[in-house]
Length: 302
Image (cartoon, rainbow, N blue to C red; front, top):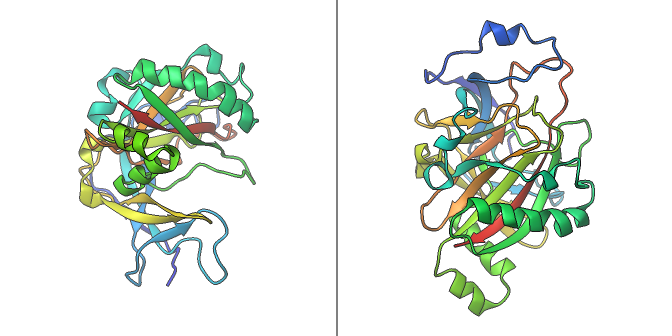
């Protein structure tokens, strides 16, 4: 039986102090950019009440089926800020990494309203950026992108639920789906392969719905739950995330047009996989711009 009931818990973790009174005083300043540690609520996985396998439909579900059969648990957790400590985090250590984005990819220089422009102009620039930031990468295959806007009636809004876009089985399926030559796919699978998301804001700096991400080394395998991701023509798999107090969550405050994030959703060699979620920062000022962002997903070999 489907359920969308959300319960609320509070983490007893004391990694970080609560929101400061100084930040609270900025609530009515529409130019204020929240930064530093914060305590905020994230939505974590709660299983179907009937014990069935969790699923969600990417598009309109069949008649009589819910969009998804699992629910969420809201938990207030500490989220730290990587600003000023960006070099402490790498794909190999944490499964996420802050990067500099070339000026040529700035929203002032590229048309992000056109899917074809994104594919024909942004993807090639991203390929150079990935190779410059991911040692050993020699083959990159982009397979989709999503633009999210925190505005009313947006086609895709920020996802406010902790998740990972891929699981080991779905990552393997992606290789076979996007490398159509079976011999080439098998050869590439002999080496290291990853699925990496490249995330950046389109209306910087980020004021609302920042992206939170967990250090992969702090996330246990038992915290992750495979969820059937049902497309009209096939079924993939994503991962829901159960909360554990050992998890260490971060965000990157006030991201500018020259800043981006690499988020590793699967790594065949290091095992990295980074849970992530947009969140409502309680310090977000009244009148803040709704966050707009683009995430591009790529198979990275090498």
